[in-house]
Image (tube, rainbow over all chains, first blue to last red; front, side, top):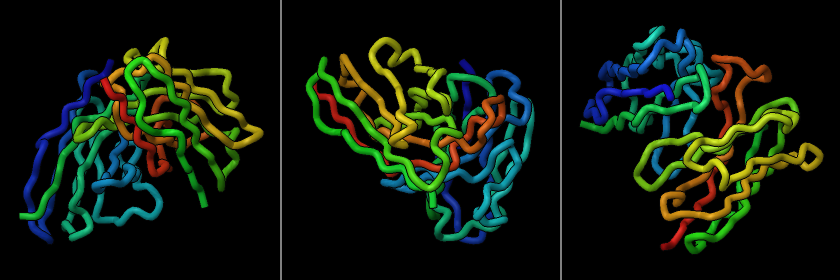
Length: 107
Length: 124
């Protein structure tokens, strides 16, 4: 199974900050990675797929990059509605594993 | 508008069974693979089972293989998860999720729509 390691697991930031979350895969997965945002009590919401393609309707302050084993999700200017937990997911092969999550909280 | 509505969760004793359903609307159901993804309390996400659009191909995680069965009825636009021999570690919110791409290939296995989730609690 492909393991995904996210860092940090917890992040404290202020509105307007630039935030970067990293996801590392245990083996190369080309650009086959997605990012999701999840708020408490809600289902995950797709932000990015194919490592860098923004899902329709997602604000442009979200961006993704990377290939192979290292990927990043960047929020260029953190907004109040962005405080949530973020997960990466590898799209290379079953089982479709997720990272452990990064919780972004208000400083 | 795509909608996924799960039902069938509840409280069950260890060793018992439950059948989850997910009613889909707003898209051509038979064109898309579907999955069940679960989230244990305070934990991350785990992809449990997946099924192709036709229903001819299925996948189950090792943690549920032999106990859970995914199926679909394309005439009813409904996805199912039959869960037998339930264990305390199966306690979770279970989400049904729609694959974002019609073609099954690496890179296409992302989920663009999720249901609101149904809670399964297994008491020991």
